[in-house]
Amino acid sequence: MRLTSFLFLTALGLGLRAAAQAPKPRTENVVLVTLDGMRWQEVFGGADSALFRQSKYYYADRQALDRAFGQATPELRRRALMPFLWGTVARQGQLYGNRPAGSLVNVTNTMRFSYPGYNEILTGAADDARIHSNDTIFNPNPTVLEFLNQQPAFRGKVAAFGSWEAFPYILNDKRSGVPVNAGMRRAPGPGLTPREQLLNELMAATPSPFGEERLDAFTAHYALEYLKRKKPRVLYVGFGDTDDFAHAGEYGAYVHSAHYTDDFIRQLWAYLQSDPQYRGKTTLLITTDHGRGAAANAQWRGHGADVPGADQIWFAALGPDTPATGEARAGQLYQNQVAATVARLLGVPYAPARPAGAPVGAVLGQK
Image 1 (cartoon, one colour):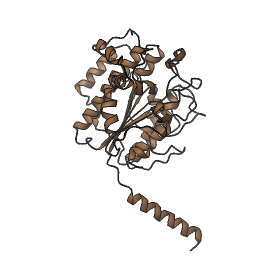
Image 2 (cartoon, helix red, strand yellow; image 1 turned 135 degrees about the vertical axis):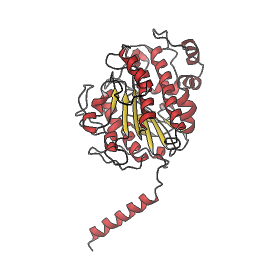
Image 3 (cartoon, one colour; image 1 turned 30 degrees about the vertical axis):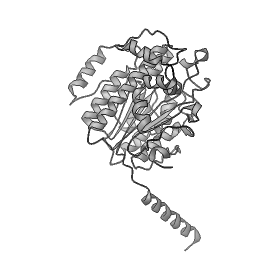
Image 4 (cartoon, one colour; image 1 turned 180 degrees about the vertical axis):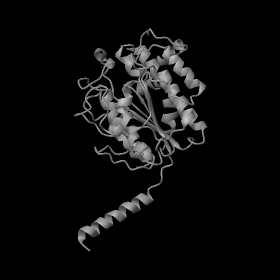
């Protein structure tokens, strides 16, 4: 036997042995959620008292929230802002991106805005040469959702919902076959639930302040109803209000939208824990497509290649394979690791044409 053949067979044997020894993930379903342009500064420090001001947008519990957001310490403010993230995810799972504490999460694309960020999250690799604008072009890069939808165990069990009208292009629904409900698209029939029918009626009669991008309340409830009716194994939900209100300079509405989006995620998780298909078998991943500028000179409103800090993001995980290590205090993660983490949690090797970032080992229980 030639030495090269011997070495190949030895390496193959070691690889098979390692695969056999690796514990099988308990995760059978994954829900990936993004909050567009949600700064790590608010996630870990709560509402910035220097920026918080009256907003023209109103909420039923507005006064109580305003008082809560003004708490004395960052720990109290962040719990008031995102109670599910801090009361459940950070206690029972993992949370990364508190930069002053030493935990870093960054994008690898140089654009530092939405389409390049979502491409990186969902494919596992930046593509600055082809994905360098927010133009609604069909993504030439297959996403991990498309990849999973091609696997026999997941075919027809992958779905996506988003507020931004660009998501059908980012996920290339025409090529991928993944159903994408985004923008002002209504839930298609037949077989719609009464709530989906009501959502369709309400959306048709509710002008969006963001043009073709709908309000997150519709995205949240469309996704929840689909989850109950279709029982997908992989669900992606992309929220957008945080980014839109920030661009408008409405800091009060920006932090309020973070608060109610946190509650939308709580409702999703509550349903997942009530259903036998999902309870104890589902991992929730939460992140953002890009960061924003610092408070100085109102740079928190924007992002992009020329905005310092716009490459700084955060990442959270909660599920049966993820040890409850809480808030990370050290280490470096990247946006391009999300796609491979999704696939590895589901026990599927992911090797796209463009080399992807490695799975986040800690989320998988690896040291």
